[in-house]
Image (tube, rainbow, N blue to C red):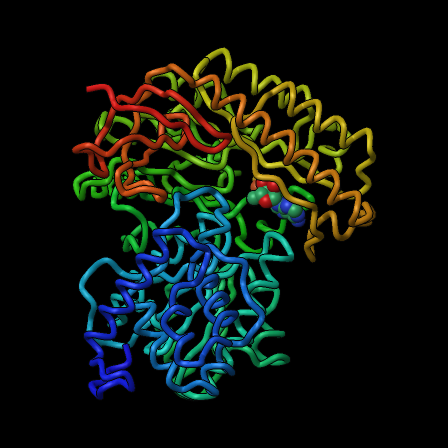
Length: 574
Ligand code: 5AD
Ligand code: SF4
């Protein structure tokens, strides 16, 4: 934090200034005017040009906005007075928290802050992009660095080390990080001792480009190299560039107790495995995160128990393919088959792990993501049916409704096999909500194949879907074998079609809840009104209802009276 005690041009001290900024900005935000709040403050002093800057900066920090065009480093240089105020503004207005989705756009670039006591050591600014796994990894990184005397900050200006935990799944995710790195270069110009590093999925592929060609960063560490971060940072401080992108067959960070950086204190993520062995042809994950490894179930259970004791009421077990989870004491999965029947029966698979976590306490909700249609067994569904605290919600990415496209995607199942899994869910878990991922315009996708996706969506009637245009990723099977030949307009039109169809289905699925009584785990105040709280049903549906005496962590029975495609509205039943 900038520590200034001098009197401001308008006669305020820092403390008064903070209070003014806090009051004015909170009011404006609450009114939801769409105006970025600091402007109201700066505009009268003739700094109206800050609009785009604030928009952009706010956007990067997790505020909802469309992003601006100005470079804040340059602008801050030209406007020293305003530059002084920015840290005050962001101190008064930390980034908003949004409900967490598997790939939540609003959380992209979120800066993370340790909930624990701030130490006196070096300050780490850690920004995360991409999927929940990355956000979860950032909590491991913060923990490893906290052990080495680092404390975290949300203020770029006071940071000694800036780390971006990056995503490579689609091209636009990478683009976002590149833009951010260029912005950070301006900060570095003013503070040469600043260490800027890239972590996560972009590390392996772009290490040379970032370090040598574009000279954007000092440090690059891949997802299995986080234990080396303290020494990598020390290397940079001694004047060298530092890189470690080695992938491991064993690393699961099982012994690292992640610090919970953001979130509501109610719901936390637990990483149960790393990497992926599936080799879907469009997917870069096997190259960026390496081979699949499962984490020791005892450490998973311990982490879940600790969270429950700390007041958490929901854990989400995370993995690229949770149905493939298998722990038999270490060693590669392919050796499992060579074990004796007795050794095999002592192994823990996902169906068993789910039961073990669910038994910690009936008041602890258990979720998981992501399921894989090729690996999801009836045993997993039966575990879900046996425990009311295992949430009745499955994210089961289909990617395409066409068997020929699924074959090119190397997904390992066809349309009929996928529909067989849907039928099993409906049979064993009649009240289960289902969501999916869909890619529009994969290599060679014909109009007919696209229509197969449309018809599958109508057959399943998903509660929710994450939908993407195909984007070619280097090194993947698809990049090597197929041409990315669906014209951009067709990809875009097909994506729009499936989004429109899904919006209808989401609304229809929500309408089915009207008049029902549901159990909601309260997560906090509603974003629209502080007279209401919001929470989720077992089926992951957001419910908003009058606050009364309820608080985060309460289980409340709610009768649903109306809905939109995204939210259910109701009243609590005493
Ligand atoms: N292009 C578009 N979408 C992709 N996904 C993964 N790789 C790509 C790609 N190259 C989507 C898939 C996956 C989700 C996490 O991201 O739908 O399930
Ligand atoms: Fe990628 Fe397929 Fe593995 Fe998912 S299952 S991470 S899509 S390779």
